[in-house]
Image (tube, rainbow, N blue to C red; front, side):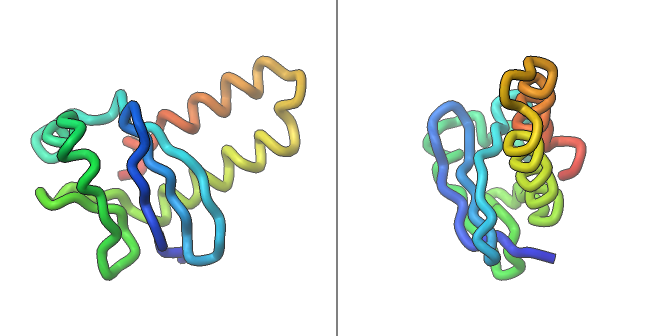
Length: 107
């Protein structure tokens, strides 16, 4: 299993995530910040307090966290689809957008 090395907050509730093997990508959490643990992340100042814990998971001070294995698979799959099949293919572009936005089911 790969661990997150860095997580950098971006605008619009996105994170730029880099793993210990160099794999990196951007995940959007904009439409996934609900429930008692994730709702506080709607505050942009709080969202920017993202860090990486000792287990290589993306986390926030209130205990919200994202599993590194789920993030890794989403980023790798989106990257593979983008590289191999998306050129000129609107259907694959839609799939990529879905993967960029759908991290909730794995966390």
